[in-house]
Image (cartoon, rainbow, N blue to C red; front, side, top):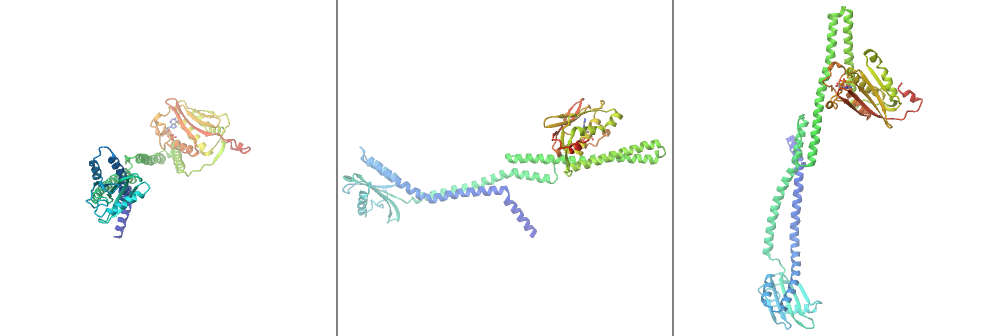
Length: 495
Ligand code: ADP
């Protein structure tokens, strides 16, 4: 039960933290705040806006009435219309207080037409007369209906020679029915906006979260070991990029997985072949050739050869594992590249005398480079051995050192068949061996991977140029260094 509760709580927490919910909630908050703002401004400002509007209106109307009144061909009809349209009582008196024009919209319930208004009118006239610009206006309570009225009085003519007075009176209370209609309408609009807004927000949050959810689902599959899963981030640039990156990553994982399988298969195969040979020849010696010294020697030779091959393979595997895992350390030292190359070449004398290989070394200038000496040797041996193995009938290998002001390029060129263009990027891969070479040609298929790892560790630029039927050149470029101070320098020259 408790576990169930925990699970439910976790699910709830996840749901509340989801993109979909977050987007939805923000959007909902946004809509609600906008509606709230509209409502507040409606309630608060309706009143104030109405009041200012009315006050402004009344002044404009007063001026308009006066121009109408003093215009030629004036009829009361036009004044009636103004009064009616503006829901406003109008009264014009002459200088003696006699009514010249009157329009009553409030059935004698206003401040100017009421039965008890004689005093009022007198008072207002006086107030207008006394005021600076001969206008008086004020908000006054209408005692009969407990409502607010706006009274406006204006002297016609001049103070010295008054022609009469204009009285305007309008109710300041917005008409209740109008307001309630407005309220109902606002409520309706608000409700529909709220429903629409929430609907849109649900749709939007879904739209935004869908690609992410889709990618997450694929990622879960990938985590479970389904490397064929494809990521689809359609929707946004960001999710598309994410999906592309994940697709790339899953491709890489697939490659690594395939490589791991191949590696296991290759290692097993490579270990088994020499082991089978060793066993077969050992049995042969035991059963057949034990007494025949010549045959025995021959078979023992094969056993030793195969054991060597086995040892070389195990060494290569160990080397590569160490290099790739980063466990290998570099003992960098400055040495003379030319001397080192000359030294290495002495080891190939036997090969050239016995098997007729020709080696040409051109490294006359002494240039100094910095690297792990043992690994440098390993690289050169690997490249020369490959050149020997794949040099074809001509059996010629060129080792060259091309010196530039800042760098030195060292290259090993053979006169073999070359490497197919499309295979060139692959040959540095672990266990890659071009099909056209027979398996027993030599080598473990790990040599160039080891070379590549060593270059990468040193940060050395490297590459291969190859021409079909002409041969291949493996090159790398090292930075030149200042020679170390003598007498240590002499020792370090590699001789
Ligand atoms: P291997 O033990 O097979 O030589 P490497 O890693 O040294 O393994 O080389 C990988 C593959 O690259 C070789 O099997 C061969 O197909 C190709 N290769 C390497 N060096 C040369 C070369 N000098 N000429 C032609 N092909 C080469």
